Image (cartoon, rainbow, N blue to C red; front, side, top):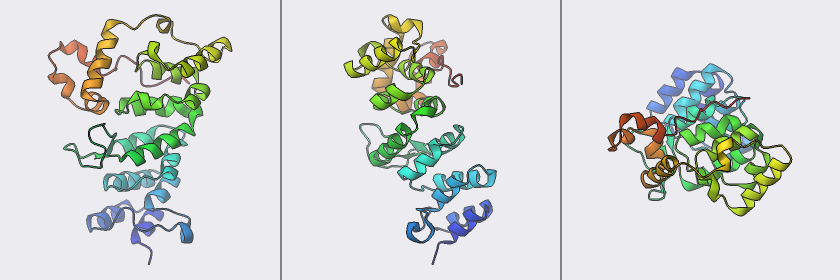
Length: 250
């Protein structure tokens, strides 16, 4: 018998979805790939997320701990806005090196398993053409920028998306293969670097990179920890990279 969650999601009945989850129904229900072509109720909700009711279903299911497979992430990244990704990441946090397993944190967000993050990255890198939509969201949500040092992203992402990524790292220490890609794109006029990328980073930028390395990106970007650091309050936004616009020009 198919879980009633499928029926409730199919009809966009958010109150029913909430009641079923509260009653103990698994947000993943059962895999109905063979019978319905759907991995889970979340897969169904994501496929129709242009509807406000279905977006609410996505929110409820992800908050309840629904698993995200690569096909689910792909639905998130092919969306024509970053709204779905922001919705999902309200309930998820990226794994840190010291905590690779899934746990519930005090803030209620579930840590992605390393395999789940790998699936997310695979889906994202299959959508490099829309990197200007999803890349700022991932970085501001605490993703470690180094995991995005991928040749396909450097080859295919637009100029503004690449520049945004470089702002979150020491651009003078890129691996030689990636530096070569940038040099080739610059010569072909398909990448227009920001002027300061031709110079060494300021000491202030190096310092905030070091602080991020010590605290971890998630803690720095998505918590109040920075407010507890012995630095002037005027520096808080800078340390969280908020001087870098999150919305990229189209």
